[in-house]
Length: 177
Image (tube, rainbow, N blue to C red):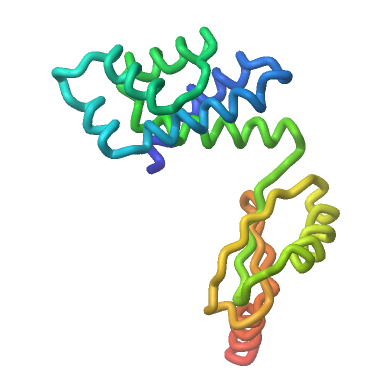
């Protein structure tokens, strides 16, 4: 996976630099549709087939994605296909979206909870977190029963662990010392 991320990064950065700020949202939507098609194992197999031309793969992707392609997006997709980088396209799109969110001052917060969190509880959690990190957060909640209680929040490379499991682990290590 690290190799694909290394391959995807220059494409995502170049694309990000070339897209005007006013068009970033439209590009994100179109790229998501194209990446969803590119993730399909049948499309990957088709692209790997030496008997299939780049234009045929391009037609399949654009036909299945059902988005209007600008000239710039068409050129980008052709460039990806010419260089045999279709497998890295979904990662290119993820990295592009991360760059867009960073420019907009938004970060992704992965919240792990032992129990389901409703919208009101999520708002109560996000308020202090946004103040702490100094930016708007988009939360993704995932259940993790091993936490016993509380939450574990991951924003970028920072982890805030207020779970019961983490507290018990800290108590254990202090008692063992």
